[in-house]
Image 1: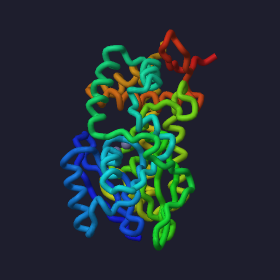
Image 2: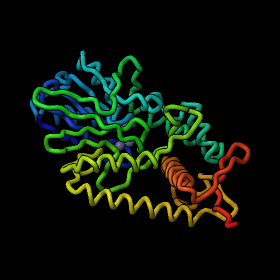
Image 3: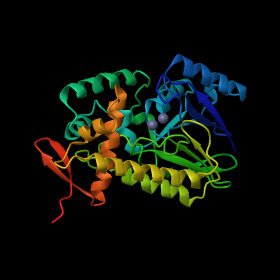
Image 4: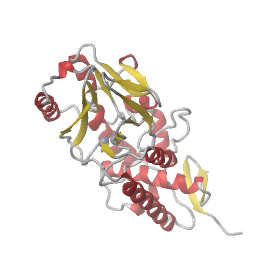
Length: 320
Ligand SMILES: [Zn+2]
Ligand SMILES: [Zn+2]
């Protein structure tokens, strides 16, 4: 069961995205790249080098539904005629477009994002949406934790690894403990836990960082020998990366706690203190980051959280 990585260009800040072709019946592609001419051309060239065309693809499996990973799923599905698309059910919100969802707007308002910034975020988001065709529910089959994707001579086991998004999945080939991890594990950067509604109760916020920490530990429990990420080079030393991530997450929490003003602040205000120079889409990523760390500190009993009008305000604990 041969896993072939193909790197595709994206118009995004993160740079190239990795997709993985499993060169064995049924021919399967894990992630697709964004819907751009350059990505399609690179994908066709990569497949050709392996004696394949898009028409040979039988299964399209998505690690998660961000545009750089799922953008071409719809057109590949159409081109490959009877190819099936697999994605975790908890990605529905992403598939349908995050900020078009009233729920997501409400979450951003609760996080204290001002009206004009919400409008800008929405406009930026509409721009990003052009890089993906949306998938209808009846186009997709659900990936479930512990499912097996079977091949002629082996299988990939589905591991639900929520955090970066609620429905993020990884795939393990147990024979040699190789993991394909999407944006759950990236060599050079700690993935951003993107602000999302809770997939079970959309009026609540998804506890992205708490879930993410569990996912990182779950991947570790397989003692992977090789991890293929959604961006950048493969990881040979997961243990080192795991410890580095934990340190980075702890350091970030310490920064957030240090920046939190005595009289409290919204996640938006904290994000502006953390990343004063962030602009465009980075303001959205910054507020996601702030929410994730503030929620985690709150879950750990280190700070208080209260509602003030429509905004949530985080406060340092007062000593009795
Ligand atoms: Zn992503
Ligand atoms: Zn990505």
